[in-house]
Length: 298
Length: 298
Image (cartoon, rainbow over all chains, first blue to last red; front, side, top):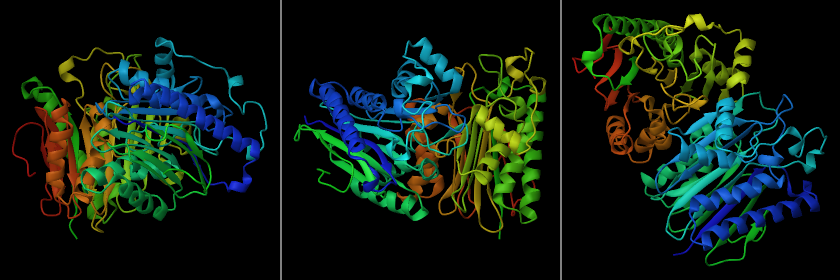
């Protein structure tokens, strides 16, 4: 059986020229490391679920993206972290939102899915559960931006996510974010919402989104893509293109999605100048990464 | 132009025999009062949005349901309130979750929709925004259950919601809840999640759900119903029946939905022994309410 792992480090409204060579190199290295982490799982016949969690953890830890260590500061000078994960095999899902000190939100989302009867935990209750589960916590000094005035150009750019197909034919999706800039305290976007920023169903596909979360929330975008396949009978690639065009671009929203269909056919669509992305498959075992309009297998 | 207002006070797994006469009478009176409040809006050519907000406010204030004043206690002995509202005309949506002292969560959801660029606010940030907006707050003594041991049989039964079609042909949906019993702190269900428990689109229909929220979240149930209409070309009533059967009942989930199609055709489906519901339309201006398997126009 083939495998496939497709990841993103966010759709970005910045122009390619605004990236320094160092920033771009760091992002490419982080994407590659994430692909290798997920690939190790998949080539050892691990689950798609383990692969997306492993890949997203690397992106969270990299400090190169608006997730985990690289999370933006909120208006109160703190960090708000959100994540979701979904198992396409069982339809199980877990998510956590409005976290402040959990190191890897995607690990907490996975624990919510597997160790509770719930799908979404938020705020202190979520952090308390993370303590019960023995997850790792970090202080404010852990985050890249804490207490510094990092120039805009060197700041992390976007939400991260991964979709995978494992050698048993199962799909999974995971997404993690540190929120948007200039948001109100308590704002939650699409990332931890099943159907908005994250969705997986073995019969249809796995989707992870990035961009202006409010547009994804109102459009229920990840599920909208899946529903176009399930009820409209179109291929996942066409569903993603049409949904992005009709329910994001036409409404003035910016962003993109990555997706894998049940056969592992990868889809990448975005309406922003750049989108950090990477892919590795059984057919192309060398990780490929891209940030701009450049050669990329998808 | 016709108008229609359809409301629910929750799908309940209790048997009809477990309701006392007093409880049932109170619930019927609250449903009727909510219908009259929404009907007043609609007959004065107010918006569907105003009508669902007015109806849900009455249900929140009644203390008869698991929303607003009747909200269940959480495991920490406090109250967690969630709500969402969506405008089928514009696709705008607002929601608030993990509130503790906001009297009418549906009003806050409406303010999130209209006075912020966000869709979902949670926890302290949401309460702070409610203060900025001058909304009403209540203390712990406001809630029906506070500090008492109300017998199970007399406890509020369910989430509340409303869908409306106004005389201008616009649809709206709103839902409000006090969460489930025996939940972890920080648990958020489907009610405040656009696409899960609440959804409205003038071209398709308006939907409000009630029941085991985790099943609605994983199935993205309200949007699944809408997508079956939009991409599958079936009528809303069939979409609701099929979605409930395939994505709730078949997976072991309990609950129900109310919905209105763009012509105001009402839909009520549930797989529980009882569901509190009510309807008023331009053709049937006398409010009709039902709790059990009894005469009801839908």
